[in-house]
Length: 303
Image (tube, rainbow, N blue to C red; front, side):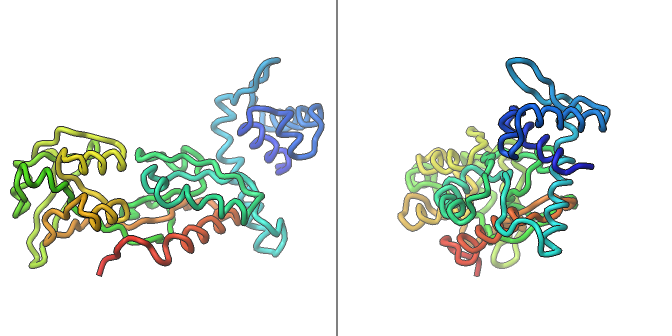
């Protein structure tokens, strides 16, 4: 299959503009249109719907798009293995991560990456609600949980210690929990559909943080909002050390049940689809994040 035509199709699908995609590849609008028509004829499917006003992906085009991207990645990786291809990584990198982690650690350093790699465009989807990497055609994601999905591969970015937190004002009004059982009488702030988290005491005691078994009057889907609600005195919540270490140092938050560890195997991973060839643009972005964030995390690490 002609990879130049595939590249044109991917660009046209991303821009929803055949002429603009053609110009990026040095093709006249008529040539770009003819080349796409030839690709569609060879596949026996209309990939793009065209009108005088707009271009849209067809159902077949949407289904074919991730495969087209993968074929281009395979070509790129193969040429790189032979020492050929472009010396500087280029292309659009689709990346998804927690909005809270990204706002604190990733967005402030993106300019450094873009200055270093001017040929790469970052297409970011930042949300504390997870996107499916394969269905969304993402090249890379950050996940802060045990890596259990067998369709994904990953590299560790950093440890992710999670603790129970509350504001001093809340603890003064409601009392300080002394045991995990005390949590059942407290106001808990939780993510929607949050599973119970195992608690492991210093002497081997086991318990759990189970919002569904206690009072949980605030349910959120955003980590920053959860932290702000906790600081305001709304209740007790689970937060990652990377998110709350400054508030713990300042006294805005207090570590609740410090003799118990949340034992859920949580680690911050850089993950990518297992079937994908690791393209140069993904590799350099992973190396950049590990160098800037993972080698010396600014938040306290497990001892």
